[in-house]
Image (tube, rainbow, N blue to C red; front, top):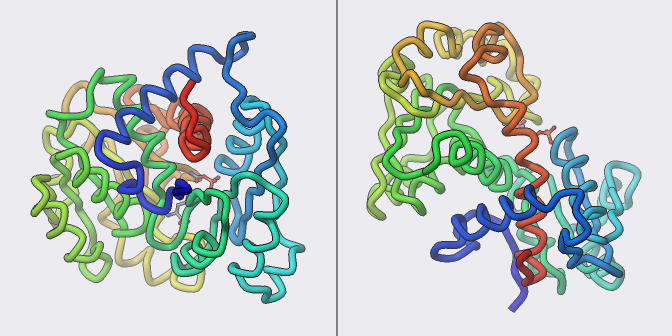
Length: 304
Ligand code: CP
Ligand code: NVA
């Protein structure tokens, strides 16, 4: 069966840990002659319906360093003029060996994956950003040496990032406290599902309650791609949901501050936090490369 990565659960039991181990090997072997090249002679189509810097470039470099040929399709395609994801997949799967797709509704990604006979990886939808969470977990493990037994805080929108954190908490049995303004919560069913699986996921209204003693503090933009028209309303609703020095001060002294980027200093996070000593956002951005290699290798059923 082909391996699609639509959500983190697709990696299967123990799959996240195995992928992070593979990513660490890719990091170690980077630039060495024995860096694995499982994409040799293969091509990857990287499809984008939304803007991207990190995802696009890290995937492109990952494919090249795995020996393959990346083809970025970002605007200008027939899909941008209304050709369906399914017909696009049927065509591209005749050319390439793996695809990644960043789009709006998850249903578009699922349609593409169902019609594709080659693996498809989720490069962000309105509901999930699993490849970013793999990089975030990789960063936490690199800094703190482990993932379990830590407390994770999320401050801000109950968006695609928050929802993939909830899924990670479910799969890894993590403690996750989300502080979201009323009206911007992640779906309660996803929280309930994570708790039923043994995770401790709670929703609070006060960012201080989420950050108190936290080992990891994450945030993201107030208005995601596609929500630009809501930006003013969201800025008012999120005014108290900025990660500040006072949140870092009440977190663990070893707190790892994360932001998937791009960031808006002075909105969801203060500059002295994003650029401060507990911020690991550049390592997090770098981790996109190592974890993307591992995800591509997993999809093609190879390990380093
Ligand atoms: N974090 C992330 O996905 O960044 P880009 O939007 O730049 O790809
Ligand atoms: N929540 C953001 C993440 C960007 C990487 C968005 O969807 O725009």
